[in-house]
View (cartoon, rainbow, N blue to C red):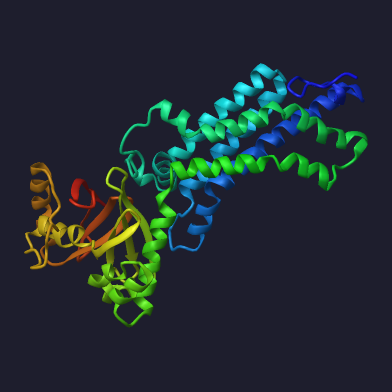
Length: 386
């Protein structure tokens, strides 16, 4: 009795009827297979992160994750179409291996390059600014090693792709719709792919959900709990006392965002912007809250000092932005426009980049300046605006 090699193209499907129509069916199933593979990897890699971010007060919570997922879907769908279109074993397997490497690169750069790109697309004022830069370049060999589980999963799936597609393709013959069992046979192998996606994302974790969730939880606890935050922190294993310095300023609605990420030192700065105008930053070290403090002074008191020479507050420590001599002279020259009253507002904020507006009390003159950096803060550029 002849045996069937699952690694080679099988023509059973075409032999049962009209070749062109069955070829189109296989092509459609190949695209569907690629799409399902992409969905499985995206859910495995980012499902938990989507869930964590969904309930957090973040202005654009899914920017980088959304772009990452869309790229994964695109790459997998293209691989599914190409491998079925050509139907060559020596093309199918390498194509899915290359796809695994590309997906590993996508996952690794989600919290940096893709998150930055999402900001650029959402707000053109930030276009070209390195909002979330990578601290170091990742060599290709690192992607190959860290994506090993994903590569193995897609390699195994590619070996039996032809058999899987023809099994469910037979269910469509004669106008029949595949039953539950047929779909389960088609989809269940994707659980392995989803698991590989989860492993890969753990190697390149996205710090947004966990870090933002911790700061949001700390703010909620500080608002609701009337007792000693230090004692509560000892009970629950969280440094709630780190927010004591700004505990009396946490009223009203707010949004939170990642200010900066330093992978080398394991530090993350989360910034919270309150509707009341309060503006705080919290330092996290190895996913544990260290402290929170007022974050507005470099952009308000320090900015005002550069414009008008207004004395700095007594509690100002490091609140004067670092600025070049050229911009120092330019700002001092504009100070004549703000002799009566100076109105300062935050226009935009993403990562460590802040756009501030200074306007005269009569509304006849205004300028905007870009700041960058959490500690220290740099004034990078300014321009007059209408």
